[in-house]
Image 1 (cartoon, helix red, strand yellow):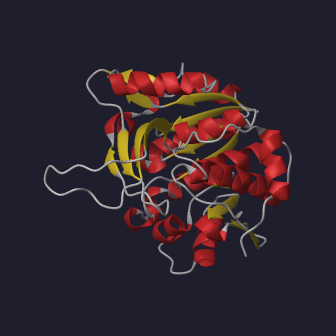
Image 2: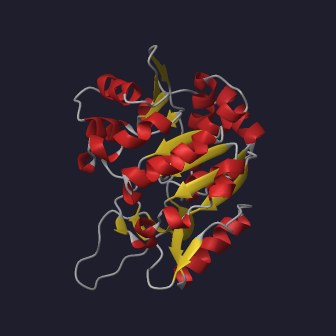
Length: 309
């Protein structure tokens, strides 16, 4: 599997546990502070690399120290960062995530350079040479730009997948409709399906996305697992029972596991099981890069772990 992950790159600063922000100039002690690469492109790249894919990642970051650190973290994970463009006048995207004791993660986010990525930055030859293109956060670069990139991939027989970034309440159908005919696998969460489709029912919303062109919609539903929706029908895949430390990066890990499974000619259900296993392994620690596991270990986990009922 030779994959290009394109789109959102973020440096996450995670603080745990945070029950409340001290008032005024007050202070409180925490157990852990970590910095990790994250985002719908970079976070997915991290888990894809663990699962044995050859990963190149593309997007826009700054020339600031934040960007330098982000590149070092991705390089250390075995990801080719040569396709990243560096902006002189724009900061690298970053988030501060105060992680609550139950694993919830409110976010303080800087959009940064991600929104500056455009057609002049796209490594067209690298996309054509890949077996898979995963585009994360197309709503940040615009539907027309995203559609052009995905169409180029399809013209060269590259398998395409898309994950969304915006919360459902900020989504509209016209933000993604033009690109759906070029998407083999759409990987949103349940809130995004409802928000971007404008429907009040999850299956109805997912089927609207399929009718607009998406080949398969794999909807993540947190502890309720995943829902696979095609023109032929729907299938539920349960999540695994684990002690959740932090949900950061779990959606990206699911995307990575699902796509790696597809690349290995597994059925969509089998791919979703691998995705759920990867997400469960990441959820047991702090940050998108948590877990020293490979494909064999993720498969072993999926066969031995208890599923949520």
